[in-house]
Structures are given as structure tokens and as C-alpha cells.
Image (cartoon, rainbow, N blue to C red):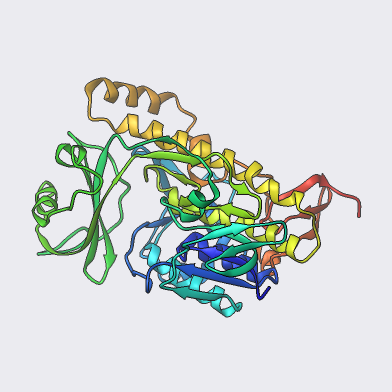
Length: 407
């Protein structure tokens, strides 16, 4: 076989996985149905755990250099969460368009020898005891990072359990006729909905609106310029040009299995949810980070197939908690007097530190405090000395089990 792994999808998840596999010595081909990268900003943030992931591979500094904003807080349904107390070297959100993240990941993956092929969708997939056949190509494994409508998930027959959307909103990148906001602010509900306008640079702004007009729209209903202009007018802003716009819902689904034989799912192919709290892109990157080193280690012959089952065991519960979190946030966003009362009580009594760690992606795994993340740049396991004794550290920075090992 000329390829060890075929990755379906060249979004952030697929590119992160491809680079991680190649770093571990695997031969990787990425198939992307779009003829070229769209360049659309799409997701806009990296949470602290994602910053750790990228720093572990030497990628973070380049992204920080082009990030429009650093935010020392996260939010839960617009309720501010201070990140200052989190146990991480990166106690902030990085405000950065998805397109910039994709660009850096693509450069990294190509530099490691990954073959990225645009304009080729996965149209057929089969597997046997020795490997997979994808569009007539043979490989040892297939990873579906091909989004919410994943062809890999459907071909593998994996159930996508959950519910359809109940609420709708729109997102758009626009220019303004006049001045706009100069700083990034966390989204917050107000009145009968929500409006967020963020500067992306070069005179472009991200607009997110969820009001009565948006709530009743269908997911596939076009977003007319007049609707965007009306939403902006609520903040005293005037629309210039619309670069792109689309609607999204709070549809919530999760694959019941992340592995089917030699096929795996990651990112939106494995789970979808509302963007509340800014966790979607981050969840996919962290899926890829978990799966990549494991698959590479098996391909190198250093671990057995049983290691691959730990991908579902570790990542499925994490995504389930994120889906639970975004559904809860959806309730707290409802513009209703009783919900406002619930929101006030929730804000008063919730453990803000624990909630901040959850949104930041730092509430799981045995991360080693104070670990020099440069040690992980090679994507291999290492043993490090600590005051309590030597610790075997996985390529993702988590301590192996048993956590403390003999020298």
C-alpha cells in the first residue's frame, strides 16, 4: 500500500490529524471535496486546551502572531468565566479566524509530506481484514473528518444519534458603512435576542444574530442583506458589503461509535452542536490530537490494535459533555422572563472555576502540571522526572497509566 491512512476532509480536524500522523511516520493522503480552501473565517476561537495542543507541536507562536485578539475569559451562555485561575500556560481564548488556523495546519502537514488533494470527495468505501478501499485507493485506515454530513460515517453505517435543531441564527462576515467596534467582546443575550459584532481586521466584521426573525427561519433559508442590515441597525451600525452569510441551528447529534473496524470519525463527522461557548473547532482539533498519535504508534508497530479502541473510550465522553453543555446554554439563552430568573440563580450558585475549566477543555485527562510542551514536538512518548518520581507522558501531554513508573 502506498498510503497508510486516507483522511476525508481538509478542515482543521482533518489537517490536524494528517499532520499528527505524518509526524509519527505514517504516509497520509487527504481527500477534500472542495476544489480549494474557501478562506472563510468560520469559527473564531481557540480555547486554552487547544493552545496547549498546538504548542505541543510548535505551531502556536505562528498563530498568536496573526491572531486579532486574546481574551482572558470564556463564557457559558454569555455568562463570563475568568480563565486566570486555570492550570495552563495559556489562560485565555485566542480570537482567530478558522481560515488562519487551516492555513498553518496545511503548511505543517505538507511540510511533513502529507498529500492533500482538493476536488475529490469520498464516493465509495469498503474495508477488509487488511485495509480499506476508498475511491479505488488502498490504505490501512480511513479517518472521516468530512463534516456533519460525513460520507464516511454514512458508508460505515454508524448511527448519528440526537435531535434536529430547534432554534436558528445567522452568521456573516461583512464590511460596514462607517466605524464599527474596535475590540472583541464576549457574546451576551439582551432584550429579545443576541447580536455580536467582532472586528476581524482589514475592515471586515463578524456578525452573529439570533432574534425573533432568525429564530423562525429554516436552516437552509438564504440570509438576505436586508436581514443583516436590520440586525446591525439594532446596534446603530450600517451595513456595507456582505462577504458571506449562512444560518446555523442548535441541532445536536453524536456518533454512537467513533470506530468501525479500520474507519474512524473525528470532528463534526462525530458530533454536532450549537456554537454556544465556542467549543466546536476545539473539540475537533482535540479529537485529531488523540487519534493521531495512537494510530501512528500502531502503524509503527509499537502498540497493538487495542490502543485504537481507547480513542472512542476517551473522546466520546468528552464530546457528550460538550453536547450537554451547549444544550444547557441554549436553554439559558431563551428570551423569557422565567429563563432570565433561572439564569440569575444559575450565575449566583454555579462553580465558576469548574465551569471555566469545562468550557476551556481542561476538565479531563491527567495533564502533567508544568510540563515543557517543547518535549512533545516529536509526537512520541517520553519519561520525565517529577518530585514524585519519573512519569511516562503520552504524546498528547497526558500521563500514561500507571501514572508513576519505575526509573
